[in-house]
Image (cartoon, rainbow, N blue to C red; front, side):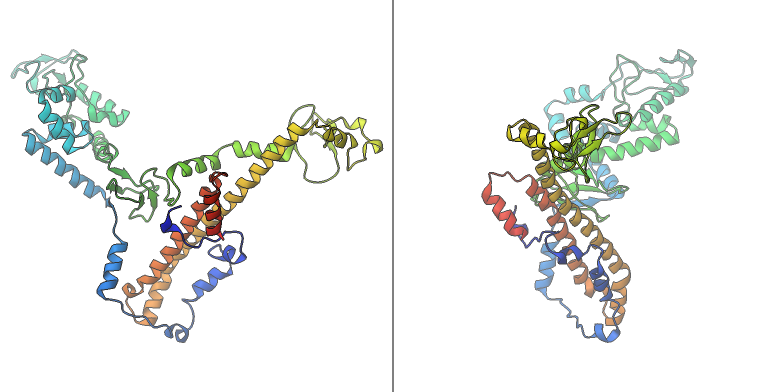
Length: 464
């Protein structure tokens, strides 16, 4: 583990004191009651106004971050700025600039490099034609290339290539593409032999209001999803995006919606555990493998129908459920009709003990014992992981209650502005962060190789 996270991490289930800490016990009520005590009790607490330069520097350093949270307005503004920059430098229209940027994943530098290296190749690849392939005449009727109906020129439209199609066919073609998904952002001329790009100006002129709204949403989202430096916040219902400075150190990101996640894998923040370990742990928690391990460790198959049977109490005489109803001995799995007082009665089996000494059951017992040990080890780490997760959720709920109720009350009692009480929020957030770190140390410990004794000893030392 990283040295910056080496603080005292107590086993969540080893000490009873921690079990009560933010886990819904009576201690929580006591902690909250600190804000509900009498005026005299709280008045004894004096608050110091820390406005020194040193404290400002400390806070500034603490809040340094290598990412920027973007709202939809910010995304739109950045997108427009990039389009204008490309349009100005390359002396092309904004529609053509947006087509270029989408093709090159909204990388301004990539557009510049490719364009100035070989403009003709870029135009051909992207579908930006310098002159029409088919001249579009004015003042006479023409035939639509899709429905083959004749229309006056004012009811026909064409992309930069000049292939004419009626407004109705264009609307149907564009609407179908938009309803099919984000592929509409790279729409080409309907003519099968033509690769001319269909720009946003055509969408605005020919699509319905509903289709234009969908296209605009795809257009905005492409700026985030196609750009390797930006990602959406993965929290449900959150519309913020994150612009991340690659190579900036920590991958931890906290959105304005208060959700913290790992930039690299977009799972919840999991420092100091690496993304690979987190992926394996989450998959193990959701996979069926542990169910099979439990069945193997805690049940035996009926000798007749092979259905797994769990025995949690009682004698060794087992009767399978209908329609099988086979009666057998739990230990040796032999028919119960061959058992009785001479084989050890209802609570023992001489046949099993004799066969076990001869090594008959060695392989099956070994498999069952390995499965049981594996299951017990997984359960040990998972229970502590889950306990710290629930404790963290409880701490977050208490924090929200403190901010919405108790902080205002404490501010009134002490005659101090809430800004002077922000250290309480910061301390509470530190508790939440410690719970998060402690939770993921159990995933780290589960996958720690057995042969790395030094790491394991150090890990267990930190857990004590």
